[in-house]
Image (cartoon, rainbow, N blue to C red):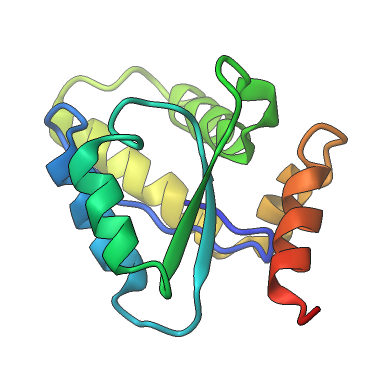
Length: 142
């Protein structure tokens, strides 16, 4: 997960993305309970699943998901993070095993956590700017 303030939160998993895996991540996201999270997600079946929707209904004061239109990766700020990570991991010699790949992913994502200005730039792209503006509007008292 990335924010328009430059924060990066991630969780690595080696299984298929399921509702249970996604719920584990959601629970970690709200664990600190600092303020309500507004998160833009694609229409992956897991994001729309029954267990996830039930959990979100119970935790609506802590987190809210906004679904992107179908087939619109160009509107998804996370796609910029994905591209950044792929470039960072693949710019090195090929990985030979899962532990090495995991170490490279953690290393690159941890580096990005220390570079909020780089993450903020993802939201400056004309197709993504709505995300920064929409989230600011949600946070401002009206």
